[in-house]
Image (cartoon, rainbow, N blue to C red; front, side, top):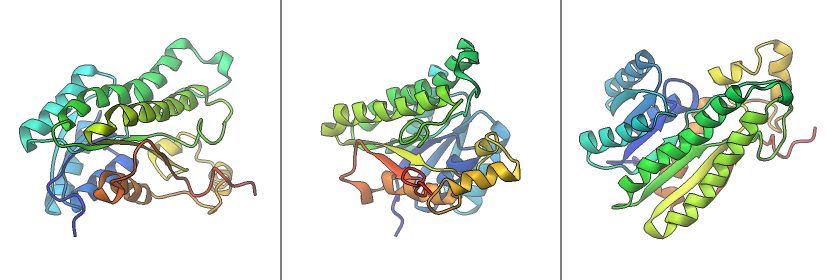
Length: 253
């Protein structure tokens, strides 16, 4: 049974990693998908893969910190598919790393704008489109800044913690109108963004060892949890920060 049959979904950050895997899985599960990211070529490749596999997808490239782009994504979903049922606001950046006193205001703002303001802008236009029929709004947060602190990641931590606060506020504001809002909290995942943390063998091994499962996730594993939050399987789940973190939040060994 296709769990998202005839549903319409927006997926941001879809050009690679978790977003790409989720867009493909949503399509397999029957959703019509609007895929979003900055890189047009990667989006075109994704749409081709989805359609060749029998799914339905369209792409619109842009930057999630652009309010006109956030609006255009929703308008495209409504124009092409007639509704909006699911939005996975997944686009994000690791941003500037380093000693906090050395982080410039510009670098701080770039990280906050992409990870937090971009999520707000997405929701600002997605929610009105969902009010007629209800829907599921999902944000990608992180264990960094939520269950653990990590040095030299102040901007990233603050932005991802802010996403969880936004999630809880929206869940209470729109729950009575059949819109569920949840944050997905992945652990270390094998994505291009993770490579920016470090690619040296000792760094990769360190990241694996801080997880209780002693490994990192594949994007496809995280996508399955996004599918749960998008589908009616989670019909009584809202306002949560759902850990899909391989035990990194509880591991002490």
